[in-house]
Length: 321
Image 1: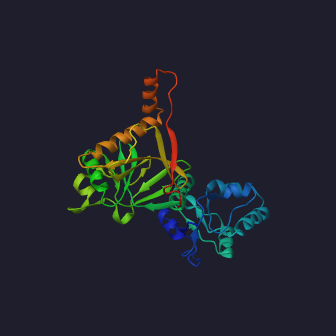
Image 2: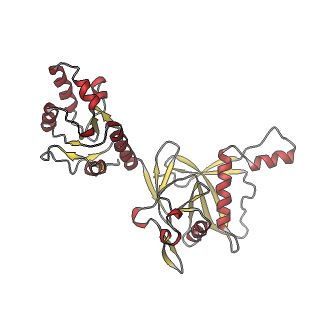
Image 3: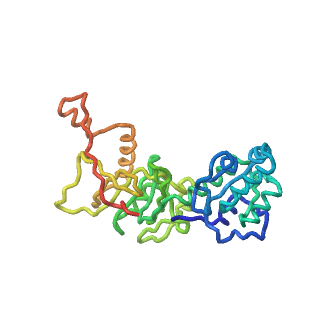
């Protein structure tokens, strides 16, 4: 199970601890759901537990004041008894001494943050979602080509870095070389980014390491990009049959998401960068329902109202984390 250090979360939102005697270093968060105290007051608590965080703002404070003192204390005591990991107070809120006393009783750290509730909720959620989403790292480069995130794969030495350089030279954006961290950010979307210690760099045989940002400028790089397709390079093999029509549409599963996949045979004299550009544009066309193979077959068969679709096949690659 993925976890996030509470101290990293506190540093991100610039929180200040109310009671330094309550230790929070070494505490981990394992849920990206941020609870609001007001919701916990109104509904039965079922999932509030260690590994979760909660926020409290002015609205919760005033809502609590609508209850008589004894009922208010009972409600708060029940919530704090769940021993969640931390309480964040929005907008520098002072919730009252009883809340601080409960935090000390149950050893729950309280942090004050300058941001208002809506902004704090967004910051906490975004940080936790980014850190807790499932991810893998794979030996592949990533480029943004005509707005399509293209993952470049293939055996070492096949020419992936050279293709990336040519694409950069043609005005496309560089994300990563050799290694790409892939995160599942929704049920249909994968986000690729470089490991922090090798971002902006490309290794080119015969030249060495180059810094893309220094050579081509800040507009030549992106910190991350959605992965829309995979282009795999393989050495040309004489006598091997290669797909010429595109009648079969291949996919690769990464973190349970199917990504379009094409394989390009590498042979001297081929302009691979142009082929990647065409593949990216063709992939975008297919998103809008266009089907060049189907249109051609329809024209050849004289059937204008029936456009055959490609067969779809999922390849057994990267289907395991």
